[in-house]
Length: 483
Image 1 (tube, rainbow, N blue to C red):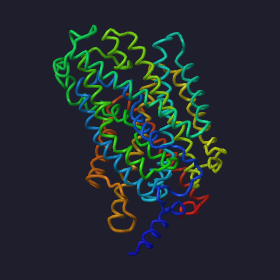
Image 2: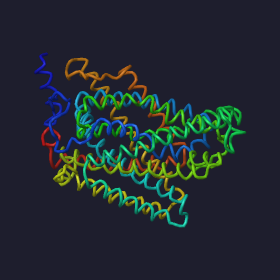
Image 3: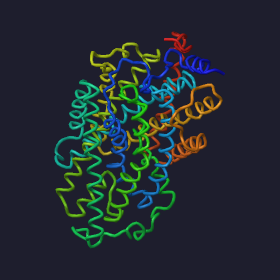
Image 4: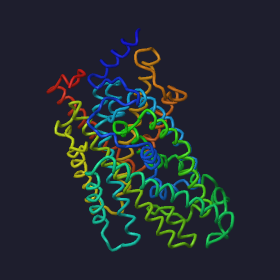
């Protein structure tokens, strides 16, 4: 088969989205402005995995698993690395803003592209609610008299306005948001190491690495307790795939995206495994409570109230950063669906500065549901939305892995171009990762709080299936690779 035939095959499979890349690795313009540079992409990738799951969700996970939570993060982190390398191989094959929804559409079929696009959109709407809920919870630290729903409303409106300016400003804001998170976690680790080695502060006399096994053992709640935290652990890593959505607005995706993806191992080692190891050494796991950030609690135990306030500000920033990313991605995903005839055409419109205003506005309006949830169930709001976010976010990972398996099979046979950024241990690592995600879904069924999402998932699937066939019946050309 000649190279021309290979590309022709790929173009037919992609429909009108097929692209020959230029020297920068960028596909033809999609209407967006390429305003995201290397340092911004790097920090979006780093900061995307540092959010509510680590700062707030880890508190509940620690009470469920104790020190063995560190092992859960290490195991899940390995799976996340394989997922990101699979995504990286696909991105270097064809970097587009639709990312995994576009790959699912091309490699698995229009139905999977439809489901993936709308489910990922739902994921970020729900995640936005999660992060706003977390931010409102953090505000209780300073002003407990302010109702949680009021803070959620104010934050949602502020972030919506921030997303109406330009993608370059979005990237700059995310750069500094992420810089604050990264600097803070490194500072926390250094202070914790100082407490352990020099013995200063109120916790100096009791701080010891023996806390990792002395207070009931490394598995104080048994292996089962550790397994039951995997849902919270996986939620912590949701948003690492956001770097794929930025492909259409990256200045040089062929260079910046692989570099960002290759930071995944040390990100996990430092920000999750390293930070939790230090915190659980400084303070016994028995001192933590669900619903309280372990970082804030640790600083309070150390006897640095100002430090706890600073950490609370940092985790507030982390939550708002993640919600900001959610508003960014929802508008892009709605536009991708609309461009493929799988969403309202009105969402294809861009402002003069290349922003999907209508898609972002519609998504922000739905995020207002979070205000109502915080009004109705302020104590349970975070747990409910976390479970919904986890199940919808993991679908994107499933589609990345399934698309990668199909792509690797086609590229090995010469039917599609080879990627310059091949995933290690493929396709076996992708199959193992799919199995791990399946295990997490099964375990969610045994958790009363997480089980809520499993009740809602069939309803969402039914809505998507009916919608898909209605659209297909009205516009069959949409599903023949035409627009």
